[in-house]
Length: 228
Image 1 (tube, rainbow, N blue to C red):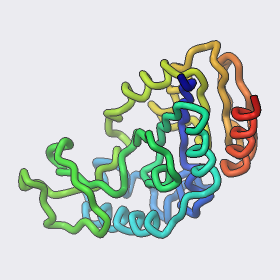
Image 2 (tube, helix red, strand yellow; image 1 turned 120 degrees about the horizontal axis):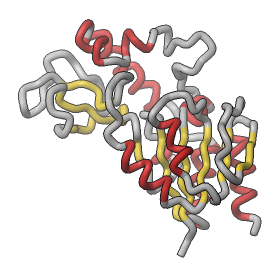
Image 3 (cartoon, helix red, strand yellow; image 1 turned 90 degrees about the vertical axis):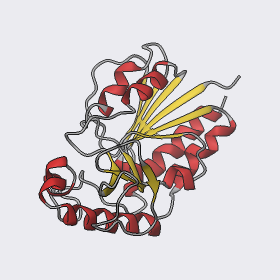
Image 4 (cartoon, rainbow, N blue to C red; image 1 turned 135 degrees about the vertical axis):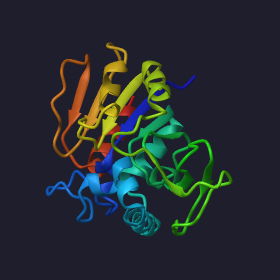
């Protein structure tokens, strides 16, 4: 039986593949305030702008490639039962070879009915105004926006509670409820935090801090976890 390694990833792991984030220094994402393009209010106020924004993001993700951090986590499946919980909406973990990926905040390559969140469809091109789901409602990105509940957070918490090892990579640990997942990890299991700037964490038990970009940090993590 392989030990269960649960990994929470955030924007920092995708940033090294060239995908910009709201974490960038100006607090904007491609020049937009979060409230303009990533809230239910934004969708109600200007759905066309929101669709344009995510159509552009979808194109960016199609052009991006997985980096060494994605490949490194996939390689750990040889040694561990690896479960990725990601805050990212891209598919770079999957393309990097990871088998088990839970997308907390939705997926850029899926769209859904604005009325019924269970009506979900694949999308590679653009979503347009007038494109409708089978219930007749406008299609929107299948993204969990700010101010919306995170439907998969309980499943993610259950995974973390069952972990034998837990790693946090490329996240500022300020976006809740995802940031709270660290608190669900059993106290006595080994924990690892990898980020260019390690966020403050209260006492969480055995903790290894790797203050490096995701690509370098995951390489170090792989060495630590496979040397025995």
